[in-house]
Image 1 (cartoon, rainbow, N blue to C red):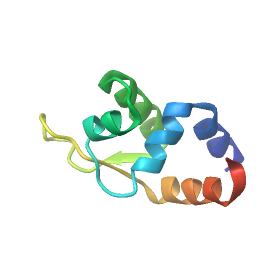
Image 2 (cartoon, rainbow, N blue to C red):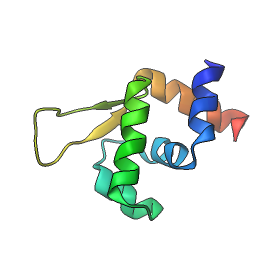
Image 3 (cartoon, rainbow, N blue to C red):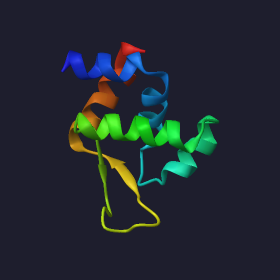
Length: 85
């Protein structure tokens, strides 16, 4: 578990994405909120998906994909909020 917490905290954008995925969200919305390019935000989401922390809720929709935290992602985020910042 500590490896996943460390993975999230090592990436400023990954950490910001995790904190913004408290409800299903589109990458463009997150990118605007954290003032990054969409490609940077999308890359962070892909990295988090590879670690099973984030999931796509509508993977077959080609135009407007929504992402949310997995149960594991929620657990990791709660651990970070408890004191790993």
